[in-house]
Length: 184
Image: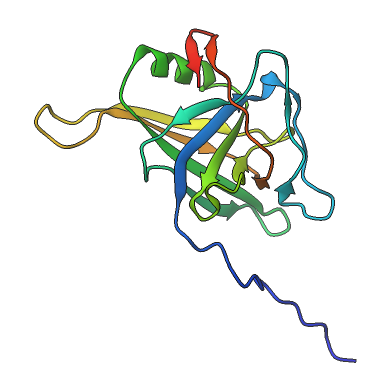
């Protein structure tokens, strides 16, 4: 009997478009009543909506266009290799509101969503972090160019996560004031 043949990436329309859009959302793990897990059939897809406690939702993060990116690699010894995902986002500008939001979230357990450029408008997002292994901010830097230069002033935020999923439910975002910064 011949050995079985396995195929990798048989998708006729593979997601090879580069990058993510500027639509990004973040929420503290503590704001969720229910963080949905991955589907039983497909361990990389979350098709059930998350549920928040009353008064909480994702914070819409306005990112500079073409600034959201992600790198991934593996780490560990043979038999214990894990994935490490490192999304990065640039927030243009410098304001008390933005600084306060980042100060509140920098040591928190997070769920972070970004919209994939290839799937833009389809309601599909890439989710970093989950109930058991949340995402964290690993580094934040703020910088500005010179008055006459062309560099933008803003915050570069790097995150780290041990898991990555495709989240296929609608993302709600909060309007109003909470913790001194605006939910959008």
